[in-house]
Amino acid sequence: MSEKSSESTFISVRDIPGVNPAIAEKLEAAGYVSVWSIVVVRPEELAEKTGIPVPVASKIIENARKMLGIRFKTAKEVKSERLNVKKITTGSKGLDELLGGGIETKTITEFYGEYGSGKTQICHQLSVNVQLPYEKGGLLGRAVYIDTEGTFRWERIEAMARALGLDPDTVMDNIYYIRAYNSDHQISTVDDLFSFVPKNNVKLVVIDSVMSHFRAEYPGREHLAERQQKLNAHLHQLMRLAEAYNIAVVVTNQVMARPDIFYGDPTMAAGGHVLAHVPGVRVYLKKAKGNKRIARVVDAPHLPEGETVFAITEEGIRDVEE
Ligand code: GTP
Ligand code: MG
Image 1: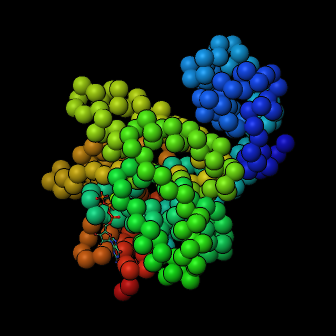
Image 2 (image 1 turned 45 degrees about the vertical axis):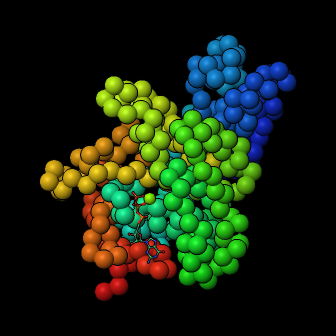
């Protein structure tokens, strides 16, 4: 089976050789519904979450991998997979260029910055833009919007859709919204996405913001290690989701502005970015005059260093008009 066909079709864990109905029930109860959710998990993690013994979990993973034809790849195959990465336009040519063409699939992109820097506006815009045809910078797909702060506005989606000449009702129909009430809810929602995403042609998953619940539930230094461990597991889960289904995952993270300390070095922002231990693209956002915002890509080896200025207009995210 080719990579291309296997990544986009839903295959039930029940189809894995060696998975009897009793095991299938345990897998599904723990949120492992598709074969893709199995091939990317470690045996110990699968065993822990399902109560299946580690050797059995190991065998299931091995069979799932065989089933999908996962093995060593040649460099040429790696190249063609890389070419398979798709991009979603942000609405600003300048910002797209900074990101190497737009928001990439198969990876996590983190937007971090202080309040009002435009993180939520970008999430709204991407949820609309992912629905555009390919030639206009979209993926003809739907969006999942996980909102942890209650700042999602359908009115804004409507306005952004209209500005692009799209039917607002259709666009809103293609955005699946969920309010996550705590970090466990946030994590289990993402677990569910392993079956939801392929069934519903979802091409973008947004979490705005990825950190707020973790920050509130694990306050202070004494909880830092526990919080980081849970957060890292969550981010790896998101990474697997992005890779398994060739979708874009976009997360936001509010950080305090500390111009005295980090001016010229946004990686030193208080709280820092959350993607320290996962591959991904980190974009630092900073307020500028009026509706202007500055974006800077931070430690992305495959992207050139630099900044760009974009604007938050009535229509949405746009280039700054000179
Ligand atoms: P926090 O969630 O508080 O950390 O901020 P954020 O980074 O998510 O900021 P957000 O994306 O909410 O950006 C807020 C800015 O977007 C506001 O200061 C406004 O300038 C702009 N904005 C929000 N809604 C509208 C709108 O309907 N029209 C226009 N023209 N601008 C808007
Ligand atoms: Mg926000």
